[in-house]
Image (tube, rainbow, N blue to C red; front, side):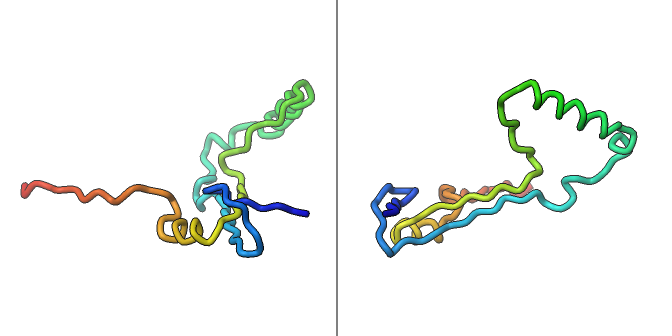
Length: 100
């Protein structure tokens, strides 16, 4: 039997659970080509990376421009809290500017 618990508070979940799916994708324009990119020998870079992977047993870090998917289970209470403040940020600060 599969057991679910809330990823925020740890409460055991029965049939009343909510799934939050997050997808982080690079914004358009982050991968714009430059003159330097056109002058670089990319085949040589790929060959070097493949050689490094053959020599190491570790998995390489995710590229900052790759898409990342995450999924979380929430109870109904944590769902309400999450929907009110999805990024978990504190109260917004109001700035006071001088009359200059």
